[in-house]
Image 1: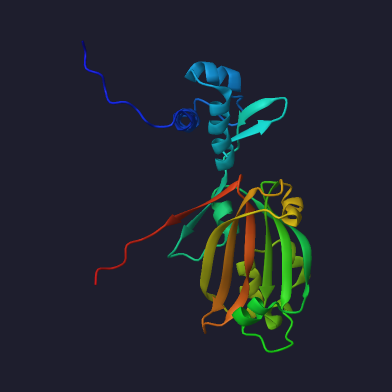
Image 2: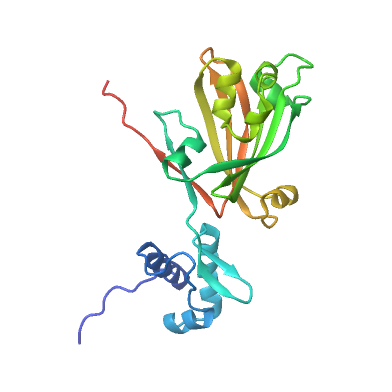
Length: 249
């Protein structure tokens, strides 16, 4: 009798998930292709539809597949990826342009407003100072990707030409209006779920996964010129980082 190999204790739903993911990565299943039904997959992997459904739900959450009621399950369009190179100051718009994509905006609002406490602290505002609040939708190749809400120091916001609000990146808006370069950009990335209001703005379901990038632009003197956040649809966006090893001590 031949000796048995070691038993595989990996959950079956995970093995199904990995098998489908491998097919997509290898190009065997491409964007827009219809995947086998739950019944067909259950038959292929000799399991139940409940187990198959669990595997598919994880792939939906990752944005690899989409499910359309009454039509089936399809390979999703690849997520837009923003690569952060920590040694280079590059806007999201410049990153997308380098990949052959075009970023456009839809302006939702731009006006001086009372400063929320956290904004007043970050921008170092005096009591009663009113920063400019910029809100606009961000599209990549015509597809809605996210919304940005930014607060600009009063002297910066007051000098921004209105026509540039739908054509320029936030970095360009600040550097042109402040007449001085940005010395440093501080970013924090976190996961969140969409509120009812945010879901309406991004055309997604309430509770859907979103990726939030909080940031502050600092001048060469260390003073913050802009702060705010950009919120992206979790099913259409991801961030990758490039880290370079420093010089030996």
